[in-house]
Length: 298
Image 1 (tube, rainbow, N blue to C red):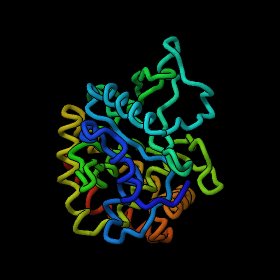
Image 2 (image 1 turned 180 degrees about the vertical axis):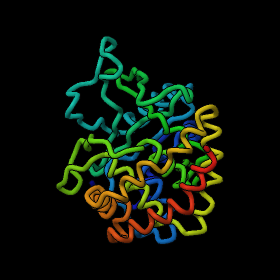
Image 3 (image 1 turned 120 degrees about the horizontal axis):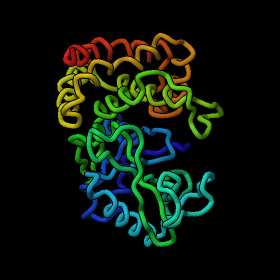
Image 4 (image 1 turned 90 degrees about the vertical axis):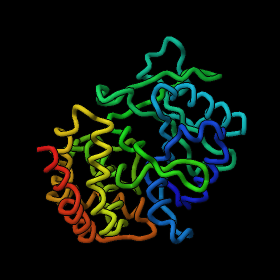
Protein backbone atom coordinates (compact mmCIF):
# COMPACT_ATOMS: atom_id res chain seq x y z
CA UNK A 1 0.00 0.00 0.00
CA UNK A 2 1.16 3.52 -0.74
CA UNK A 3 0.39 7.03 0.45
CA UNK A 4 -1.56 8.79 -2.30
CA UNK A 5 -3.06 12.25 -2.57
CA UNK A 6 -6.71 11.69 -3.59
CA UNK A 7 -7.01 14.71 -5.87
CA UNK A 8 -3.80 13.95 -7.74
CA UNK A 9 -4.69 10.31 -8.39
CA UNK A 10 -8.30 11.10 -9.30
CA UNK A 11 -7.11 13.74 -11.76
CA UNK A 12 -4.77 11.14 -13.27
CA UNK A 13 -7.57 8.62 -13.68
CA UNK A 14 -10.02 11.19 -15.03
CA UNK A 15 -7.61 12.39 -17.69
CA UNK A 16 -6.69 8.84 -18.72
CA UNK A 17 -10.15 7.39 -19.38
CA UNK A 18 -12.19 8.40 -22.44
CA UNK A 19 -14.34 11.46 -21.78
CA UNK A 20 -17.40 9.64 -23.15
CA UNK A 21 -16.99 6.91 -20.53
CA UNK A 22 -16.43 9.10 -17.46
CA UNK A 23 -20.17 9.36 -16.86
CA UNK A 24 -20.24 5.54 -16.64
CA UNK A 25 -17.57 5.29 -13.91
CA UNK A 26 -17.91 5.80 -10.17
CA UNK A 27 -14.77 5.72 -8.03
CA UNK A 28 -15.40 3.82 -4.79
CA UNK A 29 -13.29 3.00 -1.75
CA UNK A 30 -10.73 4.91 0.28
CA UNK A 31 -9.77 7.25 -2.54
CA UNK A 32 -13.35 8.41 -3.11
CA UNK A 33 -13.94 8.86 0.61
CA UNK A 34 -10.64 10.66 1.12
CA UNK A 35 -11.27 13.02 -1.80
CA UNK A 36 -14.56 14.17 -0.29
CA UNK A 37 -13.78 14.06 3.43
CA UNK A 38 -10.21 15.42 3.36
CA UNK A 39 -10.60 17.85 0.48
CA UNK A 40 -10.27 20.96 2.63
CA UNK A 41 -6.56 20.12 3.02
CA UNK A 42 -5.28 18.80 -0.28
CA UNK A 43 -1.91 17.89 1.22
CA UNK A 44 -3.48 15.04 3.23
CA UNK A 45 -3.10 11.50 1.95
CA UNK A 46 -4.74 8.11 2.31
CA UNK A 47 -2.98 4.80 2.09
CA UNK A 48 -4.27 2.47 -0.59
CA UNK A 49 -3.10 0.47 -3.56
CA UNK A 50 -6.24 -0.18 -5.58
CA UNK A 51 -8.50 2.42 -7.15
CA UNK A 52 -11.85 0.69 -7.63
CA UNK A 53 -13.74 1.89 -10.70
CA UNK A 54 -17.37 0.73 -10.78
CA UNK A 55 -18.90 0.77 -14.25
CA UNK A 56 -22.64 1.41 -14.43
CA UNK A 57 -25.31 0.63 -15.43
CA UNK A 58 -24.70 -3.09 -15.82
CA UNK A 59 -26.15 -3.17 -19.33
CA UNK A 60 -23.40 -0.79 -20.52
CA UNK A 61 -20.59 -2.04 -18.28
CA UNK A 62 -18.94 -4.56 -20.61
CA UNK A 63 -18.68 -2.12 -23.50
CA UNK A 64 -17.45 0.65 -21.17
CA UNK A 65 -14.92 -1.71 -19.61
CA UNK A 66 -13.49 -2.63 -23.00
CA UNK A 67 -13.19 1.03 -24.00
CA UNK A 68 -11.50 2.02 -20.75
CA UNK A 69 -9.04 -0.88 -20.84
CA UNK A 70 -8.17 -0.31 -24.50
CA UNK A 71 -7.60 3.41 -23.96
CA UNK A 72 -5.36 2.88 -20.95
CA UNK A 73 -3.35 0.06 -22.51
CA UNK A 74 -2.77 2.14 -25.64
CA UNK A 75 -1.54 4.96 -23.39
CA UNK A 76 1.10 2.74 -21.79
CA UNK A 77 -0.75 1.41 -18.76
CA UNK A 78 0.17 -2.17 -17.87
CA UNK A 79 -1.64 -5.22 -16.60
CA UNK A 80 -0.73 -5.80 -12.97
CA UNK A 81 0.66 -9.31 -12.40
CA UNK A 82 -1.91 -11.54 -10.75
CA UNK A 83 -0.43 -14.24 -8.50
CA UNK A 84 -3.61 -16.32 -8.81
CA UNK A 85 -3.72 -16.10 -12.61
CA UNK A 86 -0.41 -16.34 -14.41
CA UNK A 87 -1.96 -15.45 -17.78
CA UNK A 88 -5.27 -14.07 -19.05
CA UNK A 89 -8.06 -16.53 -19.67
CA UNK A 90 -9.46 -17.76 -22.97
CA UNK A 91 -12.96 -18.25 -24.36
CA UNK A 92 -12.92 -21.67 -22.68
CA UNK A 93 -12.09 -20.34 -19.21
CA UNK A 94 -15.07 -20.30 -16.84
CA UNK A 95 -16.03 -16.69 -16.23
CA UNK A 96 -15.62 -16.98 -12.45
CA UNK A 97 -12.03 -18.16 -13.00
CA UNK A 98 -10.96 -15.17 -15.09
CA UNK A 99 -8.51 -12.57 -13.74
CA UNK A 100 -9.84 -9.13 -12.88
CA UNK A 101 -8.69 -6.13 -14.95
CA UNK A 102 -6.05 -4.38 -12.84
CA UNK A 103 -3.98 -1.73 -14.61
CA UNK A 104 -0.84 0.07 -13.40
CA UNK A 105 -0.05 3.59 -14.66
CA UNK A 106 2.92 3.85 -17.02
CA UNK A 107 5.31 5.36 -14.48
CA UNK A 108 4.41 3.77 -11.15
CA UNK A 109 3.82 0.44 -9.44
CA UNK A 110 2.46 2.09 -6.27
CA UNK A 111 -1.22 1.91 -7.21
CA UNK A 112 -3.52 0.50 -9.85
CA UNK A 113 -7.09 0.80 -11.04
CA UNK A 114 -9.45 -2.17 -10.85
CA UNK A 115 -12.59 -2.48 -12.95
CA UNK A 116 -15.83 -3.78 -11.49
CA UNK A 117 -19.54 -3.23 -12.02
CA UNK A 118 -22.96 -3.17 -10.37
CA UNK A 119 -25.60 -5.92 -10.30
CA UNK A 120 -28.11 -6.11 -13.13
CA UNK A 121 -31.01 -6.05 -10.64
CA UNK A 122 -31.86 -6.55 -6.97
CA UNK A 123 -32.28 -10.27 -7.70
CA UNK A 124 -28.53 -10.70 -8.20
CA UNK A 125 -27.07 -11.60 -4.83
CA UNK A 126 -23.49 -12.28 -3.79
CA UNK A 127 -20.71 -11.91 -6.32
CA UNK A 128 -21.37 -12.26 -10.06
CA UNK A 129 -19.13 -12.10 -13.12
CA UNK A 130 -19.25 -10.73 -16.67
CA UNK A 131 -16.70 -11.56 -19.37
CA UNK A 132 -14.41 -8.95 -20.94
CA UNK A 133 -12.80 -10.08 -24.19
CA UNK A 134 -9.75 -7.84 -24.53
CA UNK A 135 -6.79 -7.91 -26.88
CA UNK A 136 -4.51 -10.55 -25.45
CA UNK A 137 -7.08 -12.55 -23.52
CA UNK A 138 -10.25 -12.74 -21.48
CA UNK A 139 -10.81 -11.03 -18.13
CA UNK A 140 -13.59 -10.95 -15.55
CA UNK A 141 -15.71 -7.99 -14.51
CA UNK A 142 -17.07 -8.69 -11.01
CA UNK A 143 -20.21 -7.24 -9.49
CA UNK A 144 -21.13 -7.20 -5.82
CA UNK A 145 -24.62 -7.36 -4.35
CA UNK A 146 -24.63 -3.92 -2.74
CA UNK A 147 -22.42 -2.03 -5.21
CA UNK A 148 -25.52 -0.42 -6.71
CA UNK A 149 -25.86 1.58 -3.48
CA UNK A 150 -22.34 2.95 -3.86
CA UNK A 151 -23.21 4.01 -7.41
CA UNK A 152 -26.48 5.64 -6.32
CA UNK A 153 -26.53 9.40 -7.04
CA UNK A 154 -22.73 9.75 -7.02
CA UNK A 155 -20.94 13.05 -6.60
CA UNK A 156 -19.65 14.62 -9.81
CA UNK A 157 -16.25 16.11 -9.07
CA UNK A 158 -14.71 19.15 -10.69
CA UNK A 159 -12.33 16.70 -12.38
CA UNK A 160 -15.14 15.37 -14.55
CA UNK A 161 -15.34 11.99 -12.84
CA UNK A 162 -17.79 10.65 -10.27
CA UNK A 163 -17.14 9.52 -6.70
CA UNK A 164 -19.41 7.40 -4.55
CA UNK A 165 -20.90 9.36 -1.68
CA UNK A 166 -19.29 8.47 1.67
CA UNK A 167 -22.64 7.67 3.30
CA UNK A 168 -23.64 5.34 0.45
CA UNK A 169 -20.32 3.50 0.61
CA UNK A 170 -20.86 3.10 4.34
CA UNK A 171 -24.34 1.67 3.77
CA UNK A 172 -23.11 -0.80 1.16
CA UNK A 173 -20.38 -2.04 3.51
CA UNK A 174 -22.75 -2.34 6.46
CA UNK A 175 -25.11 -4.52 4.43
CA UNK A 176 -22.24 -6.57 2.98
CA UNK A 177 -21.17 -7.60 6.48
CA UNK A 178 -24.13 -8.47 8.74
CA UNK A 179 -21.68 -10.54 10.79
CA UNK A 180 -17.92 -10.91 11.18
CA UNK A 181 -17.00 -13.48 8.55
CA UNK A 182 -13.83 -15.59 8.83
CA UNK A 183 -12.49 -14.80 5.35
CA UNK A 184 -9.24 -12.82 5.37
CA UNK A 185 -7.77 -10.33 2.93
CA UNK A 186 -5.61 -11.75 0.17
CA UNK A 187 -2.55 -9.77 1.26
CA UNK A 188 -1.15 -8.37 4.46
CA UNK A 189 -2.07 -4.93 5.78
CA UNK A 190 1.08 -3.50 7.33
CA UNK A 191 2.34 -6.96 8.18
CA UNK A 192 -0.93 -8.38 9.51
CA UNK A 193 -3.52 -10.78 8.16
CA UNK A 194 -6.90 -9.07 8.57
CA UNK A 195 -10.44 -10.38 8.25
CA UNK A 196 -12.23 -8.68 5.37
CA UNK A 197 -15.28 -7.90 7.50
CA UNK A 198 -13.12 -6.03 10.00
CA UNK A 199 -11.38 -4.13 7.24
CA UNK A 200 -14.64 -3.09 5.52
CA UNK A 201 -16.51 -2.26 8.73
CA UNK A 202 -13.42 -0.37 9.82
CA UNK A 203 -13.84 1.81 6.75
CA UNK A 204 -17.39 2.56 7.89
CA UNK A 205 -15.97 3.72 11.23
CA UNK A 206 -13.34 5.84 9.47
CA UNK A 207 -16.00 7.51 7.31
CA UNK A 208 -18.09 8.20 10.42
CA UNK A 209 -15.05 9.56 12.24
CA UNK A 210 -14.29 12.01 9.42
CA UNK A 211 -17.92 13.09 8.97
CA UNK A 212 -19.62 15.85 10.93
CA UNK A 213 -22.55 15.23 13.26
CA UNK A 214 -24.74 17.30 10.95
CA UNK A 215 -23.77 15.14 7.97
CA UNK A 216 -24.48 11.87 9.76
CA UNK A 217 -27.91 13.11 10.84
CA UNK A 218 -28.74 13.45 7.12
CA UNK A 219 -27.68 9.89 6.29
CA UNK A 220 -30.95 8.09 7.17
CA UNK A 221 -32.89 10.02 4.53
CA UNK A 222 -30.21 9.27 1.90
CA UNK A 223 -30.09 5.62 2.93
CA UNK A 224 -33.86 5.29 2.69
CA UNK A 225 -33.88 6.69 -0.85
CA UNK A 226 -31.00 4.48 -1.93
CA UNK A 227 -32.50 1.32 -0.45
CA UNK A 228 -35.90 1.92 -2.01
CA UNK A 229 -34.40 2.71 -5.43
CA UNK A 230 -31.91 -0.18 -5.56
CA UNK A 231 -33.90 -2.82 -3.67
CA UNK A 232 -37.58 -1.94 -4.20
CA UNK A 233 -38.90 -5.26 -2.87
CA UNK A 234 -36.13 -6.15 -0.41
CA UNK A 235 -35.46 -2.84 1.27
CA UNK A 236 -37.51 -3.31 4.49
CA UNK A 237 -35.66 -6.51 5.37
CA UNK A 238 -32.30 -4.94 4.52
CA UNK A 239 -33.10 -1.85 6.57
CA UNK A 240 -33.93 -3.96 9.63
CA UNK A 241 -30.49 -5.59 9.59
CA UNK A 242 -28.30 -2.66 8.61
CA UNK A 243 -26.54 -2.43 11.99
CA UNK A 244 -26.01 -6.14 12.71
CA UNK A 245 -22.36 -6.38 11.72
CA UNK A 246 -21.42 -3.02 13.20
CA UNK A 247 -22.78 -4.01 16.60
CA UNK A 248 -20.82 -7.25 16.53
CA UNK A 249 -17.66 -5.32 15.67
CA UNK A 250 -18.13 -2.76 18.44
CA UNK A 251 -18.86 -5.49 21.00
CA UNK A 252 -15.71 -7.48 20.13
CA UNK A 253 -12.43 -5.85 21.30
CA UNK A 254 -10.22 -8.10 19.08
CA UNK A 255 -12.26 -7.34 15.96
CA UNK A 256 -12.42 -3.63 16.77
CA UNK A 257 -8.66 -3.58 17.21
CA UNK A 258 -8.21 -5.18 13.79
CA UNK A 259 -10.53 -2.59 12.26
CA UNK A 260 -8.53 0.17 13.95
CA UNK A 261 -5.31 -1.21 12.47
CA UNK A 262 -6.72 -0.99 8.95
CA UNK A 263 -7.99 2.56 9.54
CA UNK A 264 -4.76 4.09 10.80
CA UNK A 265 -2.91 2.54 7.85
CA UNK A 266 -5.66 3.44 5.38
CA UNK A 267 -8.30 6.17 5.25
CA UNK A 268 -7.19 7.69 8.58
CA UNK A 269 -3.54 7.76 7.62
CA UNK A 270 -3.43 11.57 7.85
CA UNK A 271 -5.84 11.84 10.78
CA UNK A 272 -5.20 8.88 13.08
CA UNK A 273 -7.66 7.97 15.81
CA UNK A 274 -7.48 5.75 18.86
CA UNK A 275 -9.52 2.57 19.26
CA UNK A 276 -11.69 4.41 21.78
CA UNK A 277 -12.33 7.28 19.36
CA UNK A 278 -13.37 4.82 16.64
CA UNK A 279 -15.74 3.11 19.03
CA UNK A 280 -17.30 6.46 19.93
CA UNK A 281 -17.75 7.19 16.22
CA UNK A 282 -19.42 3.81 15.79
CA UNK A 283 -21.78 4.28 18.73
CA UNK A 284 -22.71 7.73 17.42
CA UNK A 285 -23.40 6.23 13.99
CA UNK A 286 -25.70 3.62 15.52
CA UNK A 287 -27.65 6.24 17.41
CA UNK A 288 -27.84 8.98 14.79
CA UNK A 289 -28.34 6.95 11.61
CA UNK A 290 -28.45 3.15 11.87
CA UNK A 291 -31.24 2.83 14.45
CA UNK A 292 -33.40 5.34 12.59
CA UNK A 293 -33.15 3.30 9.36
CA UNK A 294 -33.77 0.04 11.18
CA UNK A 295 -37.05 1.43 12.48
CA UNK A 296 -38.13 2.21 8.92
CA UNK A 297 -37.97 -1.47 8.01
CA UNK A 298 -40.19 -2.67 10.87
